[in-house]
Image 1 (tube, rainbow, N blue to C red):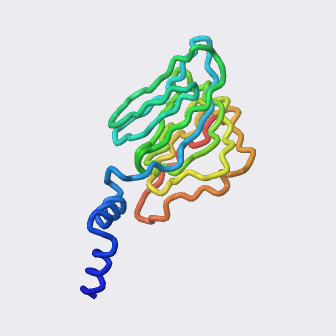
Image 2: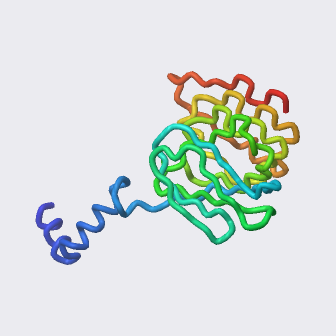
Image 3: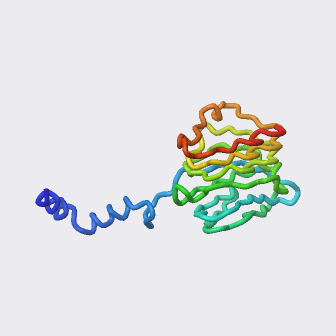
Length: 194
């Protein structure tokens, strides 16, 4: 076995082996971004889109849909963009790691009604859906993929006040919640006032 391993190392070269080992380490600088979370927003007269976030552990790149992109890490709080003109913008959030965009927290925030669609959930591992889209009264979930909800234990008021919530493709029928029987999951008010 040792001879085989040494032969492989000699064939590939030590630098190649080191690069492969670094690439296999998910916490390395070589970690690949996961599929993006994609939404569309209709700006109001202020021409501003604000996306409230809460907690820490963020590491993502956001493309605001007007040619401007930026990277956010740590605890960014509410992120926003002021556009040159009012209109509808596709906002693409690409986590730089699987846990790089753990949650969104509209929580009936000021411009909640400006969120129009979720067209792709992406590959992020969500950690909470507590008041995630609360108050997004015009929201339509057109995504055909499903969110990774394996770490989520709170769906409290996730869609509270989403009075016109639609899911034309029916992708919500395919959502899979945690299968860990030791976890307690809260669904209280998930669709309250919808």
